[in-house]
Amino acid sequence: MNRSVSPPQYTHLLSVIVLRLLIVPFVGWGGMLSEILASFLFFYMTILIIQSYRLPRSLFMLFVAISSIGFVLDMILTLGWVPMTITPTLIVQVIYSLSFGSAAWLILQRLLQTSRVTMDTVKGGICVYLLLGYTWSLLYGIVYTLDPNAFSSALVTEEGSYLNMLYFSFITLTTLGFGDIVPVNEVASVLTILEALVGQIYPAVFMALLVSTYLAHRHLSET
Image (cartoon, rainbow, N blue to C red):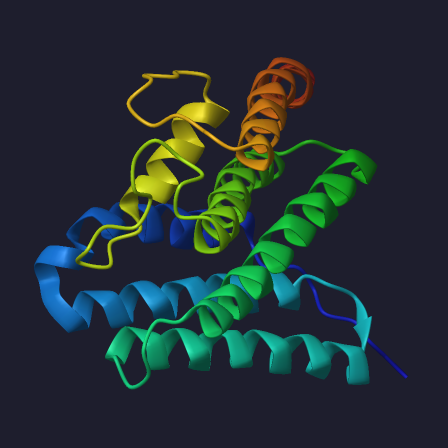
């Protein structure tokens, strides 16, 4: 028996993604409570994403279980109950990167199959763009965890802030390229090139098409 779940409103998902992004700079200042909130929002994002999948119940529960494992490990690391060693950190990063990466792909597929473009569809396109930034930040985090010298500057501060990771991902995605953080090893360099290419192609082609189609539909409905 298949579990058919209606996808959440992209407005809801977009709000959570943006809220999580806005909270990151204050995690170090707000203490443990801010860190817990940031971790919870990360987990909540994965649950919203999983709910949009049309999966058999057993597979649905498996995805929820995997995401829950990632969240529990994230909380254990956040609360300092275990040292922030390579293995648990990598597990959390891999789980979240797979969740966000697959979500971006599935949402994009659904948007491409839609017969009518609405404002909610456009918001879904923005969600994909932001999820790409999150996904690449986690991929950079994996590389950095395995090789702390993969970048010219630390992506994780001594206070445990991951702001640099997100910062580098989004300035690469938007092709700002300030140059204050530079990939050093080959894997990091290739990931940076790929993100910059996606950051150029996605808004120039897909988002432009999505917005123009939405405006055309709205114009037709008004006439």
